[in-house]
Image 1 (cartoon, rainbow, N blue to C red):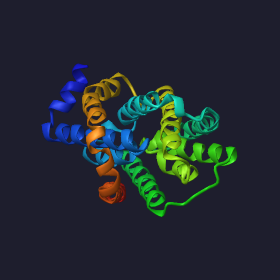
Image 2: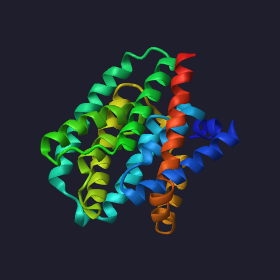
Image 3: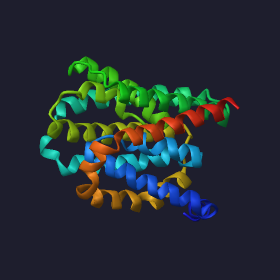
Image 4: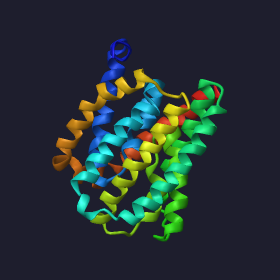
Length: 247
């Protein structure tokens, strides 16, 4: 814990931004059932790469689990099993890909490109049929993206387009809960995370808890008015990461 606390205390302004962006990401996640990673990960990677992907994934697990438990009665468990299975496959592929990235610049480049891809998918609003095959396939793509960047919602959002929000929101949250566990396990077993990253996530978790309590006040407003702004910030952060990786 001391090492993690020292890391955050060394740059108070970075810690303040991290707390703020985690709060906003939690509001987005609890309001929509997705979006924590896309809101949080690009900015965290830009200001402090140590906070991604493992700490961001741990916080993503917590907020996804909270969202799923809040509406557990509406979860489509058949979809969860199929998509989470794909997430497990994707996590294994991502762990192997991470082993081939030899430098921080290379990681920044890959991270930024995946974030830009996630933003593009979100903006495009593409739809895929709600079938087990698509759930498995997009679950695998989501697993690769989430394990490397902690952003895994956009591929699965294409499958859930058109589904009733009251069913899609908790089902996606349950998929992300189990799928994130696969990503966390892959990073830990692959040697890409340790105790310091675990404590960093725990130290930032009060901001996510505050976002949970703020959801009822801010969720609807954020959904209708600020989605474009959030995607714009994520896209700019992804572009900056690509530039950093190429520099």
